[in-house]
Length: 149
Image 1: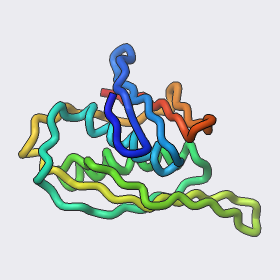
Image 2: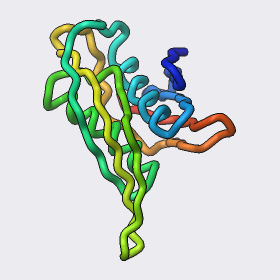
Image 3: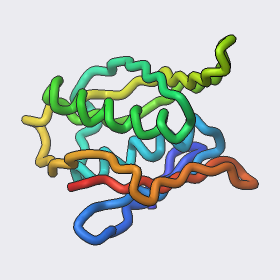
């Protein structure tokens, strides 16, 4: 089990895939913990001092879709930037309803991009909705996400 202040994650075996079970004191904390789990699923040892921080923003129609789209964006950015996103910080998650009763959830986050040339990374192909769980619990939030490897 890996812990950061207010959040934790564990990698779980899942048939031919890999799953991340995570918890956080806040919704932002659990999103960051799942993203850290994605990084851990991709690489056993992440260097502490390489890579620059970058920001990202994601919008979706509900919380679960926001988590999916956030993780999907991280995988996309890994491929485009040729960097593994690590040390995730989710600064804010906001929710709004517009006049047409459409929901909108937005996430503002940052990560450190470690050049893939500096690490021995495994390819995580995609995030899946298979068995995805995101729920409020007594002491914060829990999530379970399966990745296709």
